[in-house]
Length: 347
Image (tube, rainbow, N blue to C red; front, side):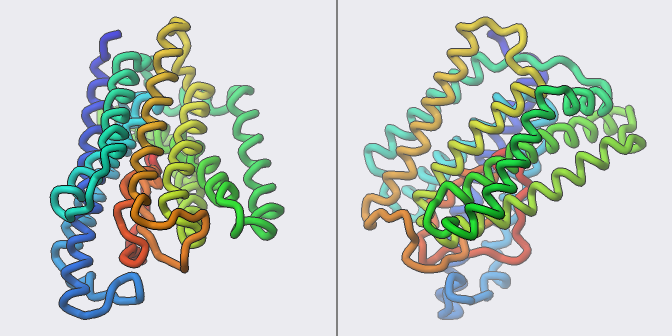
């Protein structure tokens, strides 16, 4: 199936996003190393000298550019296409880490990279074409259809159960609790990001959507979902081994996002059964490659569901989730109060 003009724009933006985000982790880590060498205090143990390190800021700017590109990609292409491509940033990070940071990429890691690329190609080839949207009111109609309202209601109920019942009891012993909250909220945030991005795109094209309260409603939903995602993803990364959290979160987040998009935007309407099966197979190949890449990063350490101690990993996650967190060793992971995740699906 040939790519439509809109899908091609979204594809290019998603690839640019993955490249910038994947590279940003390597650049920031280099900046952290330089800052630690000068100050003698690592960021992971409370040092903030990296804020004076130009290379770290280059990494931050690179990450912001990548997140903006990812945000815009959702305005052109369906989440079924954009979200899984976030895994490609892992390949960029893994390859650059092997070349620049001398962090060896194992043979299974190379196989994981190949699987991610192969799965992404399958997804791109069979990506659905979206119906053109001319107003944010159309998106609101999609968001208020019974099927999607049922999905939103289910998500809200599950999140409340996880937050108020399971989190206090087993949130610090079961990795699925915090990552489940992040993934559920993430699927709603991506739908809102796509709605907001489409509204802004139409506005820039001369069809002002800012006059509609629906645009501001979607913006509010994005803010709420992003805050919750950052909060609980940080809890998960602070409690459990990053090599465990990242692949589990990526799998859950991407699966739920695609499900939400299929329900709300009806991405699979008009597609043949064979095409849909091909997309699902491509998605499974990407997930398998992602898990394999994360697993090989832990070869030289004793794997554990529990982290050895508190850490402060980066909040940029594309939350997406597979944006290269695993490259930062546990004792060098850092987060600045100024970092935030725009959650454009990878969130």
